[in-house]
Structure formats: C-alpha cells, structure tokens
Amino acid sequence: MPHPSSHENESLDEYLARQSQRVSDWLERLVPPESAEPSVLHQAMRYSLLAGGKRLRPALCIAAGEAFGAEEAGLLPVACALEMIHTYSLIHDDLPSMDDDDFRRGRPTCHKAFGEANAILAGDALMTLAFRILAVEGILQGRESARLQTIADVSAAAGTPGGMVAGQVLDLEGERHPVGAAGLDRLHAAKTGALLTVSVVAGARCGDVGEEDLGRLRDFGVSLGLAFQIADDILDVTGTSEELGKTPGKDKASGKSTYPALYGLDGSRERARATVQAALLSIAPLGERVERLRQIACFVIDRRK
Ligand code: GRG
Image (cartoon, rainbow, N blue to C red; front, side, top):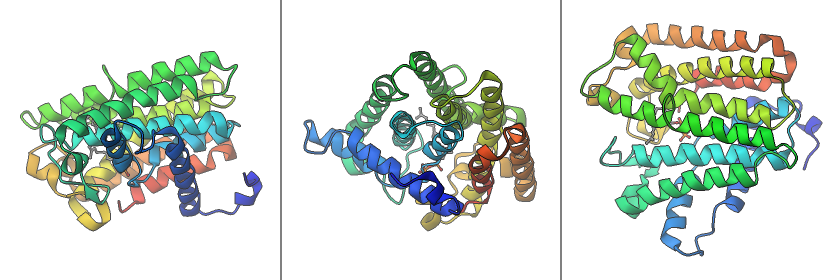
C-alpha cells in the first residue's frame, strides 16, 4: 500500500477516485463470484453494486476513519458494508411497487435486467451480507465493543424507527399526503440522512475516537445528510439523465413535496449552502485531521450527479 504521505497533494477528485477503486477492489473480494451458485443471485448483486455510483458513504467512512487512525483491514469492510446497504436500498426503491424506475447508475435497473423476484432477493442478500461483514470482518480484532456498537448503529440507521426503511415508508405516504417543510426534513433525515451519518460515525469508530468527537461527527452527518437531499432535489429539476444515470423529474411527476417546490430553486440552493456551513461548524474543533470530510461536504452540494 502506498504511504499516506504520497497522497498529500491529491485533489478531492483524485481522492474520491482512489477511494472508489479501493472500495471496488474490496467489494470484488467480499461478494460471492458469479460462478458461485445460485449464479443469477450473485450476478444481480454484482450488477448493481459494481455499476459505479459516487461511493459517497464509503468515502465518508474512510475519511472519518483515517482521520482517527483506522487501519485498512478493519475500515474497508465497514465502508463496503455501508455501500451494500445503500445499493440494496436503491434496488428496492427502483421496484415497480415503489418508484418504478427503469435506469439507475447509467444502466437498466436490477429488476429490468434480472426480473423482479431476483431484484428483491439481490437486495435482501446485499443487506444480510453487509451485516455479516460488519460482524466478522469489520473493525479489527480486540475492538469488540466498537464492532457491536457499529452493528447496532448501522441496524438503526438502515431500519426503523428513524432509519432508512421508516423514511422510505414516509416518502411513499408523501405521494398521497404531501408534507410541509418540517415533515420533509424529518422524512429525509430518516431516509438518507441516517445512513450518511452512520457512515461518518462508523468510520471514526474503526479508529481511536472519543465520545465528544463522535458527537461532533454525528452532528456533521445530520447536517450533511440534509444538504445532500436538498442538492438531490435540485438535481432532479436541473440535471440530465446522462449526468444522473437515472430519469430526472420524477419527484415532480409523483406529486411529492420537494425542497424546490417548497423554497424555489434559489431558496433551496441557499438552504443547502447554509446547511453545509452548519456541518462544517460542527467539526471545526477537530482541526486539520478532518479536512477531507470538509471537502466532501462542499462536494455534496456542488456535484452534478
Ligand atoms: C427501499 C428500504 C428502501 C429504502 C430506499 C435511499 C432510498 C431509500 C431510496 C433512494 C431513492 C432516492 C433517489 C433518494 C434520494 C437520495 C439518494 C439516496 C440518492 C441516491 O444516492 P447517491 O446519489 O447514489 O449517493 P449513487 O448511485 O451515487 O451511490
């Protein structure tokens, strides 16, 4: 492995590309090969997981972990488990019974390529494999309490109440009963914020971090999650299908409440900027070691995909 100092002058783009490659290399090893039976299941899992994506959750996990001295062997499995959970949620979200999407990550959605039953099962298998990896591979030996806490945290962030599954239910209900500004923040804090927040916290736990700093990182994650979602809603209005790798404009068509609908595009951009500032303020006491987290926070609202 190259010495960390050889990456000192790396731009954020280079850093994200390098982390994405590391994550893909680890995922290759952690997910059963297509040749293993049942082959169609492993093909479907790999199809969605290795299709790219920004790898934002792993990047947050790695940046937080490295800020607190985490080692690759304990940290990368945690980063990969988070990406598996995220990918499972995208596969299920795209199903006909939910968002009914044809494209994701620049290719036909998992159910379009493998059929609905296989897509449901590929999502299930990614989620269950993620928890096995957290239990068996994530966080180094001798750090049992950090490992158990991480499993509990990730389970809460992915599930209910307050986690991703709960947020998804609120989102689906929102198609029939649009929510106001406070309801929208609550919905997204659960649906996307919780997994982004736990990515930062779980990464730091792979290293040597105290409770006070964990609290700061948690606050950072909560604000970042909100900023991410505001940016996502803006991109749904302004982005193209080539940039996004999925069909834009679906929020408006579904009748859901969105930030641009509530605040307008300029108002949403202003709120996204203010929310990132709040995220940066939360980790100001952590100094230089969290510089990558700061850069990722700014990237979250400047991205085009
Ligand atoms: C089905 C339990 C269940 C949950 C689904 C996260 C989610 C909940 C649905 C995704 C739908 C969606 C488009 C949400 C908006 C924010 C979001 C999570 C976008 C996709 O995440 P990115 O932009 O995707 O990080 P990539 O492909 O870059 O990893």
